[in-house]
Image (cartoon, rainbow, N blue to C red; front, side, top):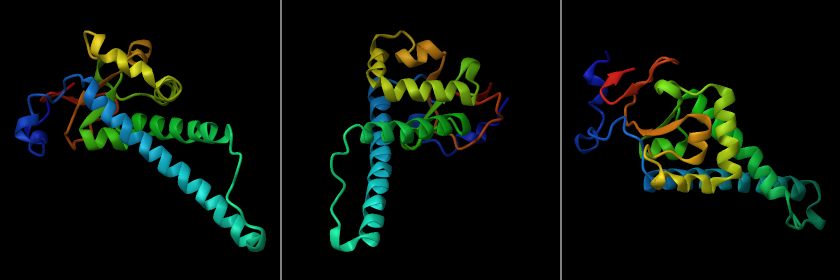
Length: 172
């Protein structure tokens, strides 16, 4: 049994939601923040490439053109590891941290790297799977259903052991 002290940092109004499956609005907002993070990283990479090109050839510099499929391919290469590493370590991406969410596996356990990687790839390739949440009895996306994961409200700063996480007011 976890100490109830872990909820002291959780706002009083949010404590009743602690451990419940997150709804569509919160999950879309978290995904939007994560999308902005990936776009910012992608922009930084292309700006870095442009800066190096300028330094090497300043007289013939021009911004990269005809990027074509490189943007979504590099975006996939950034987004999938970003989400997978976030979910298998703390269970939270930056967007999830901002909105008080945590992604969990079966039985409330943290995701292993394989499942986190599969979930991240599915989320990046098919983000519309998130819109299954309002139709699901358990507020689960298509990715959650396929991989037996869930996203719950968890504002707690307590980091539980790898096989157990804080859900509600209990350590499971």
